[in-house]
Length: 249
Image (tube, rainbow, N blue to C red; front, side, top):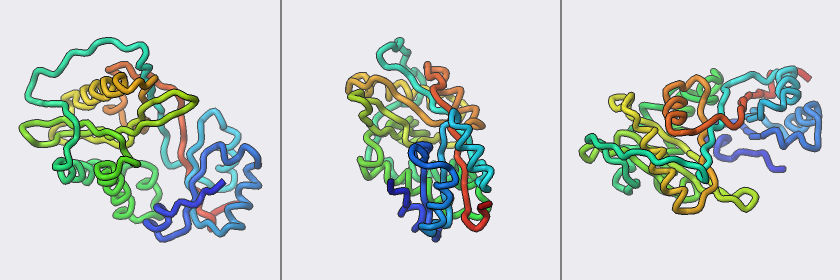
């Protein structure tokens, strides 16, 4: 299993690996740590399903530290109710290439000190923010990153957005939120919920079975916005970082 992350290694200037709980399907935590050391990784990002507390606790024992907690929220598109359209000055529409700069500007404001990168004090704050800026920009220009983007438009200004990617799992198609944000001056107006509804329509048209979002547990406003339109918690994950020069062998 290849765990080397070139994009993170190039960004942060150290050799970075990324793993999930499946990395330990055929090895113990101790074997995993030996592998990281033998392959001269500097930093490991581990996103682990909370049901695998044995792995989480094992990594913590060796010096990994918790950096974020996330719920995956899921909505079954085979059982969906009708939702009313907005009747105010906001228009929910598909992304246009001319929206790119406005969307990137929203990301610059919204993702400072956000997520597991930013909670690691050994990583550059600028590099952490740049990760989300680049992720947002690439969502706009590369369909391998995001299949579809919907925006909330107010008088030609992008007020918020959600980028989605189409996936196939066990012969079922589904859509997952890639990245999204609402500009600070437009928050509290239910824009995420309405963008979700546009996402539902897109998913139903394309025969998706479900749609899902990963949401940080302390991002209460976004959590509530998704719950408002019928998303429900499906699973819970944690992200840990392990710096090899801090590992307990």
